[in-house]
Amino acid sequence: MDAPPPFSDREIAFLDALVDEGVDFLVVGLAAAALQGAPAVTQDVDLWLRDLTDPRFYRALQRIGAFYIAPTHSTPPLIGGAGTELFDIVVHMHGLGSFEQEASTAIRINVGRAEIPVLPLSRIIESKKATGRPKDLSILPALEDALRTQEHRHER
Image 1 (spheres, rainbow, N blue to C red):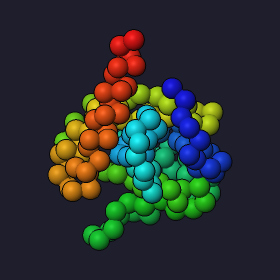
Image 2 (cartoon, rainbow, N blue to C red):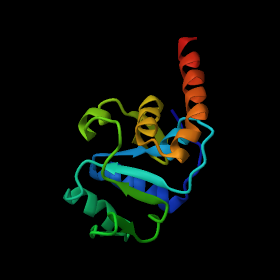
Image 3 (cartoon, rainbow, N blue to C red):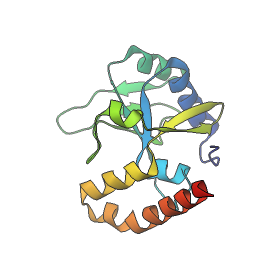
């Protein structure tokens, strides 16, 4: 599946570096839904990484001149540097299985020269339901409609 071009060249370089280095990650949240054709708008791209201590993650960051900022008691883990401004690090997904379980169902979407792993729309919906936050619940009808459309296309 090919993604529309929502990413800048620097952001694509970051995703390419993650894939090239073999970092275990998933694009999750509304960005993942949008990459699958859902009518969703978001201001960030959530990346769920299996292991924040993986040296391959640090090599990917170094390749593009970016850096990791460890979490504190009041801040989540962050990444900084050109090409990473759009990305947020996620350490837990509500209502889902382990990273390994969810990664086994990931779909691959072409972005730049790499195929990036993306959480399937059905699993995004489950996570949004599990959070119970009003902003997550309000997008559910659009995500569910997009999933029905996706399933209908696959039936043909």
